[in-house]
Length: 400
Image 1 (tube, helix red, strand yellow):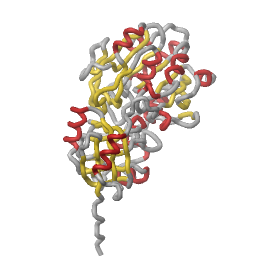
Image 2 (cartoon, one colour):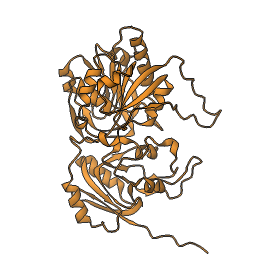
Image 3 (cartoon, rainbow, N blue to C red):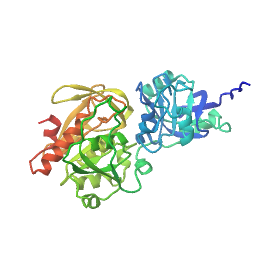
Image 4 (cartoon, one colour):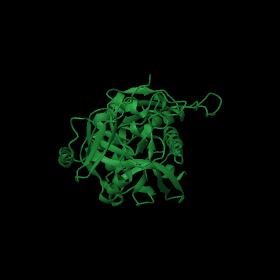
């Protein structure tokens, strides 16, 4: 006896400007409100869904078919998703991959994330690209599908400026991380042994991705992860050889107390920052931030090293950027990398202290991996500093 398929559930996506998209619901039944953004990656949707940097946002995928490889625990970047909703053109209902443990639909149902499929994502992306960020509401709740009501809710919603989203994603207590990178099937993918000489690093969790911690571990760092508001004195009491500032969601100006903590740590500690950590470091050193029109979200951004002129294809996920002119006014800070699409700051380094950071994600999983060498440079900087050899972030950023 054949089973009768359940009829598709209806879903609505309403933007603050009154634009409405109707499609098919997947994932959890419910409503999500957030800033709508688009990601241009062709793969890695599970890493995107579980990236804490998307807290407070509705994510639209530009690649047309999503869900084809399902979901598995090894590819999660956090214990759960923090995004408010997921938008795709076509959802693959039956994944085909030997690593899949469940479908994307089941994964999102399990974590309470609503999704909408079957809409014109190209039209939606053009609207965001041309008009910039705006708030939106997604609803898969059959009792909450009134388009005008949802659009009014989106219009009344405050944006992300000044909002502390890090409070939502940071860990509650310090913990040690001891897991290395996934090496595939035994015997197929050789992995370099972990260095025998190790260094202790305190990683500030602003929404840290697990693959960052894996790469730090593989480079010979004993990592202790601490909550975002951990006072500098408490971090220093752990006797670190260096400080890492993680990625995270939203506006760096909203992360209360973080620039002051980092400013104190920068007086004595080697520091490496990624994404939001890069922006918070920029604020701590005297810079300011600005909001981008529609941000950089995807795995195909061109980041140029201003010293070598080489271009790396980068994974990025941010809606704010450190203002270049503010860094010049602050003094003693070199802009080391820029985005070739719009000239925004992609890297900075201190001229006198062992401090550097990058805006993009050198740990990108599943890729690209062009910029993974930054973890090696961080290890070199920490090693030289611990040995008493004078070293600056600018030297490390230049590879000297």
